[in-house]
Length: 113
Image (cartoon, rainbow, N blue to C red; front, side):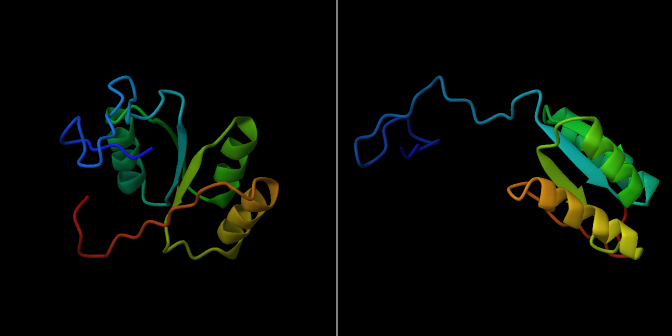
């Protein structure tokens, strides 16, 4: 089913269901993994404002602990993580849950948080 979000009646005659919500379910858990505390906490606040449950970790070891503690729906790891064990953690997560979405994030050095 295709929804036209601007016009409730799309050109092909399909009516959008007004009961369909595009907002995330309140229990959608997003694991944010970044060694920079300001980036990690900023992303956590932004996710909470959008009704996601933000789970924060500073490294791969903490990420694995959070992963085992409860259901994680999406992982947002920092692309610039340099410790090999951090990357091994993501490989273990996807070995356990091959359909786990992992969205890489990257912040340039001169960007403000």
